[in-house]
Length: 408
Ligand SMILES: Cc1cc2nc3c(=O)[nH]c(=O)nc-3n(C[C@H](O)[C@H](O)[C@H](O)COP(=O)(O)OP(=O)(O)OC[C@H]3O[C@@H](n4cnc5c(N)ncnc54)[C@H](O)[C@@H]3O)c2cc1C
Image (cartoon, rainbow, N blue to C red; front, side, top):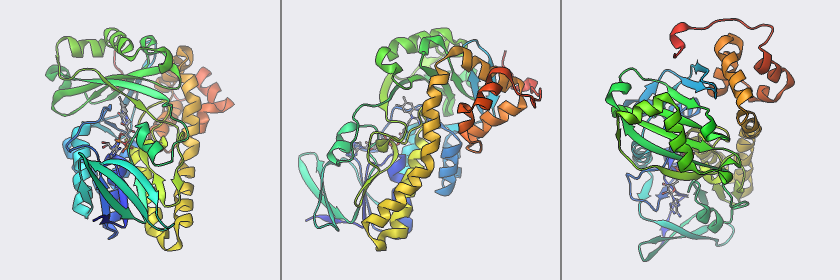
């Protein structure tokens, strides 16, 4: 006997749970299936940036997430030469083990039926109206049917291929991270640190403070840099080089091995929709190039697909796919700029100039804050006047350094 739902959501990460919660709240029957048994970990930096805050607010979950996370006062950008600036924006760090468990609970509370240990195997379009989806639960085959299917399986290639959405198998980035507890340094530390360093050329390293004095330390490469690099060696170089990371590890306790995962970025590499089947989250490359942040946009794309189904399902597959694709198209320009900006941040001279000018100039700092807060058009990073401001400072520059925002 097969299970029948209005919508099947495959994958219960941030994308799948955001979609399932939204759909279930609209009284649609939702089957949310994941191959993992929860709570499950996901290799991640665990940082929530403003777009994740916005998405969590929209889902009605921000207070619950703040309760289990370590909120920060902003993002500290550190240049290759040690120059640094605090960019004020809403942010937090919360282990994915806890975040994803909360998101899953919220989808179940809304009415979604969750089946763990169910690995997606194949999908067939039965009659142009209904999909038949097969999962494996151990050795058992489980069949589910629905009019709409959302694929939310993250960066893994196989399910995207099995769903027929894959355009390019290659992932564009790779990142590794480790957990370290340090009670002493956790006391007054409330910033997400993004550090550019020669040990991670073509990428950056991070130090994110989470709850219970546990820091998430990692490095990631963007663009093609990872093809020529060894992430483990880069991580070791980075933690030896950055004083903060060095101190954290020297008198802290290492809680986990160094673990890595690929990232699919740039809204590229997969079809967004094919009939009533839509990809959401990292499987369609919804993770940002340059920064590798993707939790916020995973939830946002999940909500976009859910809204398209809720609003357009009576008009048929074409209308739903069109509404979803248009929603995604609204996000595309930002991804394109971030991808091009990867080039700029692989040049130490340009990165140092940007960090220094952001520290010295209220005008540039406001622009950078706007990037994180999604209130500035990121295209300024690619315009001639934008480059002039980054390289030389601008005519309307206002010296406004907040001494307490500096680190020595
Ligand atoms: C090292 C690293 C650091 C990162 N740091 C950050 C950060 O600090 N902040 C940030 O915003 N983003 C970060 N990211 C990116 C972030 O992890 C992703 O953007 C985000 O997890 C994407 O969410 P998702 O729901 O699309 O996919 P996922 O979170 O990957 O969830 C996919 C789900 O699908 C399930 N699944 C997979 N295959 C199948 C199958 N065949 N059948 C059934 N279920 C399946 C998985 O078990 C999983 O539960 C980082 C990534 C890496 C690798």
